[in-house]
Image (cartoon, rainbow, N blue to C red; front, side, top):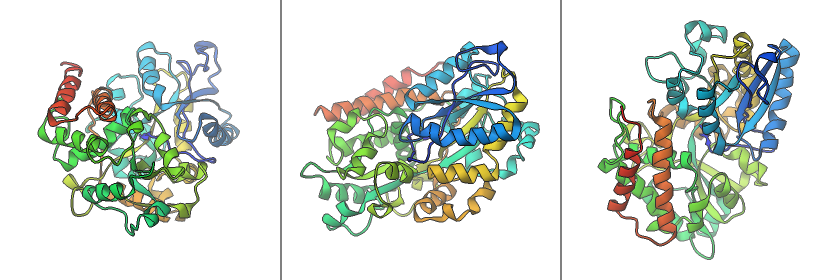
Length: 438
């Protein structure tokens, strides 16, 4: 996701989009049955520097689709702060779009509502078949063993981005490869109003992405093998504390970052206030903020020791955006045709180049644009050291509950209140109590 992201990956020329609409192929105003079946509604997540940027990126592609098929696509770009609630409301009310983008981490949760079209062998065949897609991207499309609830649209991974000038000014010649090295690097820079690492303490999804990866590095998954919450294990507590301690103890994250919600840490990075950020496919966003490619470098996100890989050396969640169809659409055939268009080889190259993301469609990855220094790190991470977030029905509740716990701990750190193993465990116990009971 984002995404996801949860994170936004945009540039002046790029962005993902999702369109708001009413049920049954209805209009964005909720018209429903009176709407022409030649019109689709599409909710797109806000992936660019602004909603307006996203519209400028997507509308030409939607116009192209209309010219090819005669089907008009009404677009609404939905901010990440609203997207999950909008989708959940739509699944219960029936007032949803025909086609929508979802953070890939939500796939299993939304699958459990029964509102989304299953991508069984027949439906996948309509868009070219399952084998067109990269395996890691397919791993975040729903519960293992069930037909996918969505298909991959954009693939992303976390990397460490660093400001070359700030590193040079501090006498740092190499990006950190481990967390200890990152903290040491951050301390050399965190002075005179500048900070070592950016964070977004009020961005619940980003909080989850970071602590999930740290959890893997501490042998914690946050869920048991049978899908039950396991938020208070020693590894989970250690992961959350390690992340928050970068503000509370290590002092490399600015206290004000506790209130950051979306893209503010990237803005600080672009302005030379922060030397490093952990982010998904951020190169396009930096361009939209006025940075030149020579201003920043990119390296694999840190591990505890050694090199990135699987298991305890995981250094990213499998990030990305999936595309789904509401089952009650009045135009399933048109919606499927639109998904086929957006996941086609040609369109995948166009859109992923714009976003700085990696195509989840194998054939599109052959384009030289996805072998640049910036994208190679992301592609290699997805192939070798990224792990999908738990594909369990309660994943979205996990993001809200644990993401909020991390947000509250960052608030404690910013206010100078102690962040201890006990206080972290108490927050995680509270989060686990908020999870649905079976």
